[in-house]
Amino acid sequence: MAPHKTLINRTGYPLDVVLIVRKGDHPSLTAGTVNVQLPAGPDHEDMKADERSVQTVTYGNATNIYLNGLELSLEAEGATQSRRRIVAERGMDLDNALNMFDTIEFRFDGKEIVFTSSNAGSTPPTWKLTPVP
Amino acid sequence: MAGRKLFTNISPYRSDVTLVIRRSEDPRNTAGTTDFSLEPRQSAWHEYGDKVNIYLNGIKLVSMFKGEVIGQQHIVIVRGSELDNHLNTKNAVDFTFTNGSIVVSTRQVN
Image (tube, rainbow over all chains, first blue to last red; front, top):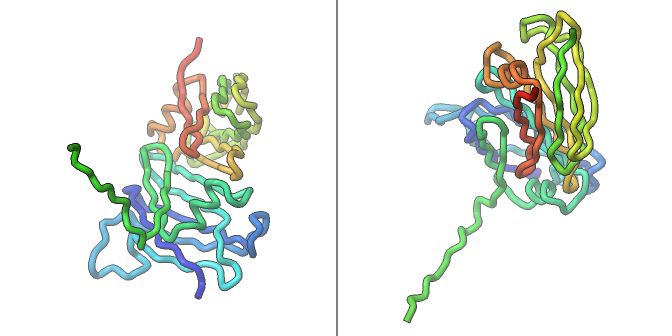
């Protein structure tokens, strides 16, 4: 099965995402790109699956299972804002963010598009409070 | 006289800068680009355009940090927008680095 990610647009603006696929396991090689357009939302019941602000996207194939980078762009307040982040070295922050999680969530802070990664199936941490005797 | 600004890289990473110059007054038209690099904590005046093309349409930044290459671009579409005002009503541009983003801010120096 081809690898996949769930992309969530919480920027408040239509967001263009380009997933850059790694060829094999070395970040210096690229195996094409996947373009995704995520509407601003909110989503409606009658929308098609590929018109939603949350989309699960497949990329690569059985051998090209990693992402090498992301390009993000949106138009807000009379300007276009674009960001591109490309992995240069394996095991560093960006590589881990792109390749150890199944969900990527995008936000816009007014100036920059930012993203966070998480695993949909993971249980949020819980703390057990011990009453002070 | 061409446009002229003071660019300061406050970030700990070398930054490659491309200025996108507006042709005359309409942000839809471009009159080329100017490229330069700034070392960490380096500050330098740079000129761009000419006596007719004095406005900036945008800025592109590329840095390398923590095993990744990060590129950003900010391009004006509408005159009088926040970005247009940042780029064209101040004479100094500063770059800082926060949470994997290059943050651009502007100020007026005398």
